[in-house]
Image (cartoon, rainbow, N blue to C red; front, side):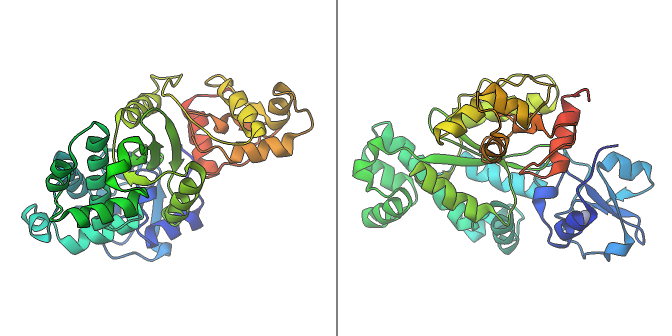
Length: 348
Ligand SMILES: [Zn+2]
């Protein structure tokens, strides 16, 4: 059976409806016989009445039935159906303003959408849509589209309104934006919970399991490291990362080829290069990694650099364990490290 996060962690997650744990576990309520995703909006049961399972399947075999509201039989880690519907509505025309009326016409309560975005994506629904619109405007400007055309095409009534919003987000007026590069961020669903992914035009720069409590801090750090604006969006690099991750989690991909960029100190880069050379399905100790990168006895510094890795899974920091086989640490939680190693079927 798969390892679960600690009971305290799971209790916190479901009591706060933390969607980062959807797909990680389900909670089953003894008194009602129903099981739910952690993010379910239904009334929260008392922790003493709750059983936890790693998968919906295990809950079903234990005699529970799926909740009608959160539909926990859906693919692991998948956003609820109504959220996917709303996201694809925005994706079809990221340059349009989305009014409460049009949200209602999809059968979705605008207040619920606002709460969901704030809670799961670390930004308001309006900020998400504005980011998508401006990101799409930036892409057109960089392709050489006329400014007038871009302004009118993106739901802004006036040039000045567009210029202000654009400059606030990208730190540069639209007229000078041909050379502005931003980081597009998106969420990638996985059986271990959603990952936040960020990419420039050419490189994947971020892949981390999201802790919704940490999201805003993550954005601030990223902006500081990359000195570029961060907006929600999608591009070829992110699509490639999404496809490769899906194949990885299906067990059909052992080596990632999506191009990476990871700014850091010389030492950090040596450590991260060392990580990239650990083959799929193998683990090494911090000591061994220190030796391999010609920094013997620097295992503590190696451990720190390992923890500072911003591109989880692809740069496989989960393959470094303590001497003697104990798992050691992992930024995304030890249970995730264990499940990644299980997936790769590491022999102990
Ligand atoms: Zn439910």
